[in-house]
Image (cartoon, rainbow, N blue to C red):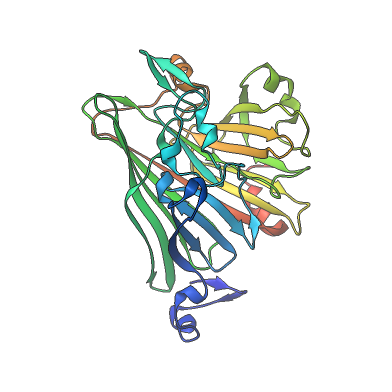
Length: 357
């Protein structure tokens, strides 16, 4: 039953008062006009309760723009929306076409550091986020007194003599909701075992990220990416203001899950309004690693909260560390990540209470 404007509505109550669900929210599709994203299809989902977000079928059904009561939830790079066909796969070329937004998906052939194996190059964060989805289906409908909305499709990462992997993704929410659920299935459609690396590169930006913001996570241990990150160990959990000359820092967390096997993570800014935060929930048996990227430079003010089935140390290092997930022919692996907007002290405290801080 949708909760809108402080009141619960049955389907009959609501539909007696409006002509179409689009008066309040819903799902609509459009295409961008001009620039590097010219012609790029976008699906906008609006829950009518302040949460709206853009899913981009031309970019692996990632979530670029996202807002809550017009407050942006994710950082956007200066590239703006870029069609995935402009992707530069070599080395660090990924950053030239990455808008980041709320979610960009790393994988499936590489996550993190570029690598070379058997004379084949694997660029930063892999190819997946620049591939277009097919069989896209975006819609909404009543299910009893719930109006459910979704965007779904399939993304094939394949090459002759190479991998043949498919991501089946469904992003869903409902009228009146302040959260969304990402459900993914990755299947090896090929005839030989293949690495399948998956990273949910979530990118909170200002104002959820600001001076005094804090990352709440039950971290059992952390592996610094390099000596620079190790030198900042005391401050991994807290964030400062935009800082000229800031060098990015990365940690790989071993996170403790709750009794139900789920992990909770939240970035909280209590100083913004009545307090605001982004809550993240997922299963540790699906995504055993939490990669944290701290990039608080001037104009480059973002943090990455990145559940994954691997580390951001790259394909070569994951293989050496035995943290590389391999799919057998015909095998499917599932992932679920839930994102929740936390507004006000009550919602924040309720979400972080099981974390213990």
